[in-house]
Image (cartoon, rainbow, N blue to C red; front, side):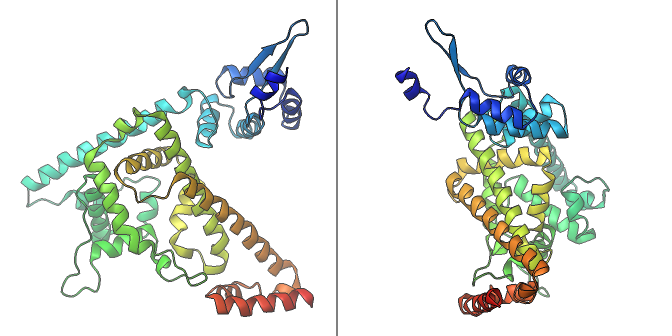
Length: 372
């Protein structure tokens, strides 16, 4: 018995699982069925001489049961539940994530192959509209392009498509140099507009800016290098651990972007820090986009050391969520408590967060309001 205790230290007990099941309205029989479907982790059953056996549950089983119960309320489809459990980082059977990831990778690679064919034809027919011009003139769209089409059209949209095509085919090196009558090159300007990241150059918190515009060429160049040297289909058939790590990176990056946007949008406006598109993607969680994001991160990890580590991304997401919690509490106090109405107004908070001296003055005002 003492050996069992040491071996299963940190595992969850039957009593803990029973409490979790009761709290989520599930029965032991339902739990067993879900485990047989590969939606819950395997257990360890240790027989004892003369008096039955003890069941041990891996750490995190209760949390997975709770997540499973919530997903079942949304959709009683094992494939839906299994896929979203996997995206959340829980262990499930491969059939709930690998086939879809393979399908998304092949779909993306086929698209890139067709793009290269079209571009080769463009080189032969210089008197015809280019591929990006033809794409801009078409009405077909998807969940991301629908957002971009709200901001760009005509030549501007074609210029942005030109950047995307260069990245996808591995040919992007840098944005064009400005023309004789331009302050900035058109392809750079429209890409900033398309991604809605302009505010990252102006919004300031404690003297810091996100500067997404400045890092954009580096990111696009790293992506282009990855697409030039490999295909997503190779990644999805590669080491499982790399895919799992990229899944965690994608989830935490979206978590960080959404939390930081929620924390700042009520202060800086809907374009806060250039994170509106990231927050929108994080809320939508389109399966195809998340799949490509996961595989893209795994590919970038192979080709570049410029990404934050998995631990750093997770830590950043945790800090962003704590910031959101504190920020929204401040917003609610400004709305519900007359003492804080002025000091927690968006304008005053924005001024107070400009730099350290501004913060010191604002903090004194907050303390006076609290003591009033």
